[in-house]
Length: 518
Image (cartoon, rainbow, N blue to C red):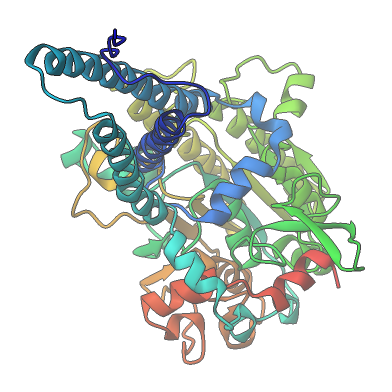
């Protein structure tokens, strides 16, 4: 009787046990490599993030994303998806070759085959990969803290105070606020950069200017819209159900249905009072000027819903014939040239005004203006020249007498989006306390009573600087840093861990009202 020779390797047939095991191993292996790659990508670009931050950037204001820098999306596709696919494909090929060579060796030496051993090895390695990388990704996205907070019955309503409760002064000062893209004091560190990149702005914000020495990026804040909402409304972005959303109608059971993070929304946080609303009620006119497209992350929707009747953005400048554009929008030099003209017009009108601006040149990875002659890499050049343009604008305010009747607030919208260990192209900031840049001026002078606070404190601080009566110095969830107020019973009365947990708590009772407009 003749026996058919056994194949060198295990035969893989469709729907066989071997096929199912190897397919499962490949899928799990791919998942594990993707987890690892995405964790590294998030850490390399943003550091530790939150679920709300991820959802906002994925779902909110996608209409304007193609008007900005696509390098971040491109790098995610390349590093987070394509690279893992290539790695797993290569691993499968190596594994298949190893199986074949081992089978041939066993056949030549007369040793019995062990196909189940290969299956076990493949499955064990893939499971170990997922088990080892999933917790890292969860930590990178603050998933553990978020889950713990979702189970919490605590609510920010316990520490929230309605900004509408403030009282306007009889004599009103104008307000100019400039959000400096990704700006932090670390850029002044000559040991990291060889020079103080913020020197041009330091030169014009000396005598009479104040700052909060340790102005921390608030828990849950790390991108532009989060920084704007925190400092204009005094709250973190989140939805009625715990992730930022807006009402779009009623579901089958009659309950309100919310979209993710304001995507396709008709209104942005219609039920909350923010800075623009307070100033409108007090007789101010509100104006916004930014280089980037206002549809990105629903910035225009937020501003126009909260008192900013005048909104100027990338589309405005293109229609006006501006040609000096980078991938995000109008270059800072042209923006601040335009802003100087705008301030002159607003002061001549004689009505108290609020002018808010947002720069773009210092956005990662750095977009130096077309006339910038500073030395260094793109980021160093972009920051140095942007500070020259901002400094020139501040100098214009001084020379025209605007500083005699205008409060000026300069602040970063958030820290630069890179982790400490790999900050600014290999320059490590390990051991450096990274905070958000801030500087402010008041014609009446100002005293900082709180040297260490966060972005949630900026709303009541601005109202204080303008001369509004702010009950207990509280507006939103923040407490003013420029008044001598008690912190007992406020957010700042909690230890850092408890504070972070409270900010991450869903606070559905509060946010259903904010998003529902009730």
